[in-house]
Length: 620
Image (cartoon, rainbow, N blue to C red; front, side, top):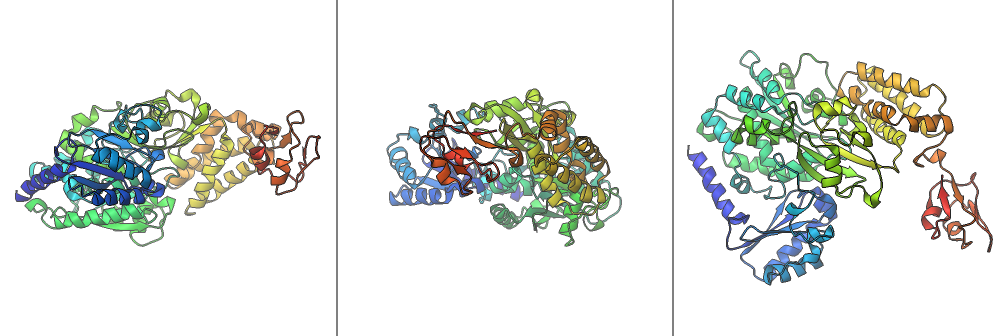
């Protein structure tokens, strides 16, 4: 096929320009231009690199954008890759640092060691690949993120892009594709963990000559989750290629990517990638000269969390209000416009091309018996290294938090980790060595979810955490079914009473019974999983709930209604700083006498404790 040869030729030409060990002449500078980098000022860093390189007429130096490099807390990040492939990672950049890097490193060949990733960690390594953050990672879904220019189809091809599509169209039958995905053991990375190959097979075997659809769920709505966004911003062609492969496998010629409008960079790069794929004959009619045709359209979501549920998402694509449907029939039989449809999320699709190229046995050899491959986690909260990690299934929570994540800031104690977002549960310190896979997490009252991982320390109140996540699901409930619409609201009201000191004996039992009822009777996954944060915190942190109810105390000193600020007389220096900053005029005193806080006037803002230089203001 001529187009297959063109693929190799274009990819080879691009590889000559990329650097990464291939270009012996020039230097390549890649700047992380994902949302995390842009928010930290990567735009001005990119502009500065371009300006400094042009000003010096450095014709053998290329400056290109890339997606999320990984360690989001160190943004803006840029990597300088020499012709020999040696990589130096510079972090926390600004235009002034860029000017020095170009002068010292690019022109004079001296690495600016005080700006490197190692210096940020207090160590002497220069490349991010040598950091603890990267050790233990295995990047499959994120294989190209932070490496290639996401707006260049040639660079995607240089790293093997569209070869998987070429293989399935010229060497494999649709059933062989389905069998390969089934044998790989790939399960849906969007939360449910259903077998991807089984889902494809159901749709492929739907009887009759009828229209079928391939849908991608890019409506990532979990608080703290940004895995799918990072793939779309850093490697959009991997999703496009995978969706075309899925279309071939089930007999579909049309796909839809449902992405939330709050992801403008991802949407823009998707649009560019789809346009270039069409221009190169990789989308549209008779792909690779075969009789297979497939095209894609983008549909923007308005940010409704419930549209992450597959039937609600399809209803929204149809132009209707996003509400879930009763199942069965399942989408593989009656989905989008009542036609057979498969829906996978971004990360699931991103695994497909490597599985086709390297084989089902390769992928199934990674991970655990029932959870194959890797999982991407967006690590946030009370942890030193916030960012994206991709790890083999079966790794422990301790390894993610303490090895890659660098532990808890300030040496504080780990208390819990929330996995699965509002649909997941809180994992206590006693389960730090639990293997992270689908079944193990469900056994301890949590779930994999899409991959958000929020770390909490001893200063977090678990009752308040449960209330926070439940408030989110109450707001996001579509209201179609009674248990979710009313039950979650009643649960939230009980939690509010508990955190504000109004709870009474029996409320915990009522809360637990209601949570189990909502979980068992709700229509869709949103309502069925909404009680998980409540049930898991009741299971592992019941003593905190009981302290709120029985003693009217918040052990973590978080719930305002139960917090009291006092001034310790022996520590007070009578300086009056606390009184000057108190907006409620709740603090009084005089020289040489300890100051006093009037509890009736105190609004519990904490400014007095923050401003006191002598540690005299105590929170209890």
